[in-house]
Amino acid sequence: MNFKKQFKEGLLTQNPVLVQVLGMCSTMAITTSFMNGLGMGVSVLLILTASNVVISAIRKIVPDKIRIAMFIVVIAGFVTCVDLLLQAFLPSVASSLGVFIPLIVVNCIILGRAEAFSYKNGVGASLVDGICQGIGYTVVLLIMCVVRELLGAGTFGGGLLGPDGKGIQILPSQFPAGMLTLPVGGFLVLGCLIAAMQWALSRPKKNKEESK
Amino acid sequence: MDQIYQLLAITLGAILANNFIFSQFLGICPFLGVSKKVDTAVGMGIAVTFVMGLASAITWAVNTFILVKFDLMYMQTVTFILVIAALVQFIEMFLQKSMPSLYTALGVYLPLITTNCAVLGVALLNIQSNYNFISSVVYGITGGLGFLLAIVLFASIRERLVFSEYPKAFEGFPIALITAGLMALAFMGFSGLKIW
Image 1 (cartoon, rainbow over the protein chains, first blue to last red):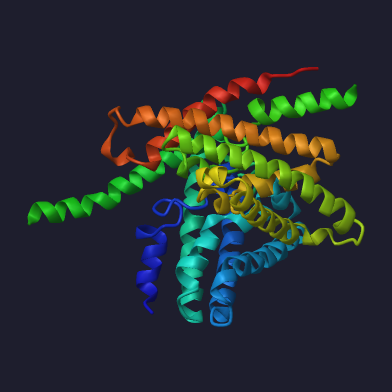
Image 2 (tube, rainbow over the protein chains, first blue to last red):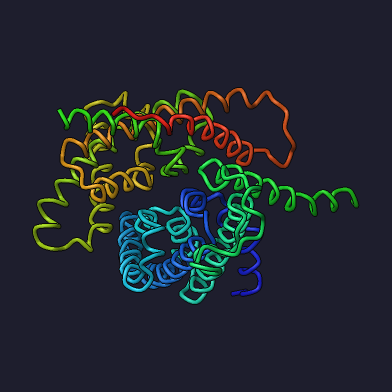
């Protein structure tokens, strides 16, 4: 078990969104303000960690054939918990995330990690994996939120900071391209982020090849 | 008459103005994953339309006659995903026995539909917007048709994309996402569409 390696994988080399390209729907849909991204990221982090632990704990008593159904039930249970908690304590976040909280059930990241990692590894390693992958997801969401909010509405920290929780105005309000907070912006920003990631990951390899 | 207007509004909304892919971001995974060829895209689109229609009908019934009646609303997510998983399994078994040609055409896409967020999404949206039975089914089917339209258009663009030149870093998903973004921009033009 190597915490440092797993952390680096979750954040960079095996980043769930940018490298494995999982969980795209929520990534693009809700990253319009800082608070949305933070709420979604933390929810997924909690659910991913909890379901990873439970699935790796029960992995020896679950028959192989019905494992996917078991995974989904475990995940759906945790999603319901988080959904109810959000509705109780952070109703504004719950209403702006809307249908995407229950849709975490079918978020490929969680099912993917269950199948690829926690079904094969011990409880401790799965816990660490859940946290690292969750942090990787949250970081990407926050980057997308900051870019889209800054260029699309000219603000920073919407839903969390500033007067009325509308965020701090950084760009004067006539400059921003409102398009970026619309669906179009989600596709474009995520496309550019993945491209940047592919470029960054392919660079060191090229250097090595050249030095050889 | 009101019912007809409402159905027409739902239809136009689900196919064009509030397209599941381009404005609601539901079902992006299969949209990106299964859109390299037009043939497979058509197969996936039809399968999704079929499952979305059936799932809307069944989840509506389950919600109205079981969950609401016994005050179990908080079990919605768990129940719906199980209903959808079971439904997809049944469809798979039924097609295998009775329509083997269609079954082989749809192949691996059928089980994948379980984790398509458009299906669970449509079930949840039906409940949220308080649709009655007919509206729910229409919303499910037209939502699926919108998905079919989007994925077929996207696949035909991607087939041509192979011959074009773009920066190396954009290979694969990034260029597909940029393409989808431009299509979303085009679909935004429908958002002013009103029929009343």
